[in-house]
Image (cartoon, rainbow, N blue to C red; front, side, top):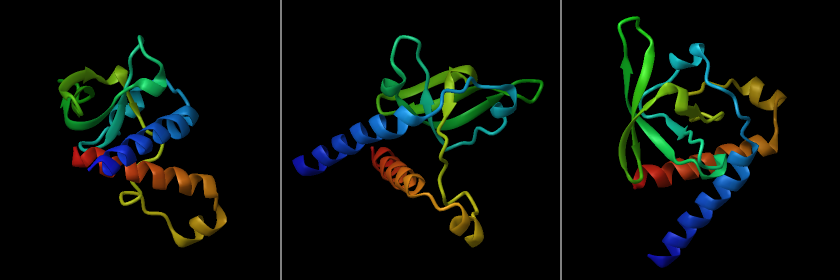
Length: 132
């Protein structure tokens, strides 16, 4: 059990330092609100913490208003559930490869070992988070 806990902590530390350190900081825009999906892993932005320390969360529900826009999301974190405005939610640049349909030609033409490492690392972290 202790080995598994150490492995999980190392994986989380590595994900935060390698992936989140390279993540470009983009301000949320109106067109991005409609792309938020239930069960997507996101970062919860906080002005009082460094981006590397922002908690990860899973979107449980998207709440739309009368104009049809998603303004608020209900999130599940390791410490419980929260409701946050979309302006404080940051999507990860790499989404689950299961949902993405990449053709064989694209994979061969745009082969980048760093991207494969990022995807592998992200998938490992997502599996660990979903177990919690």
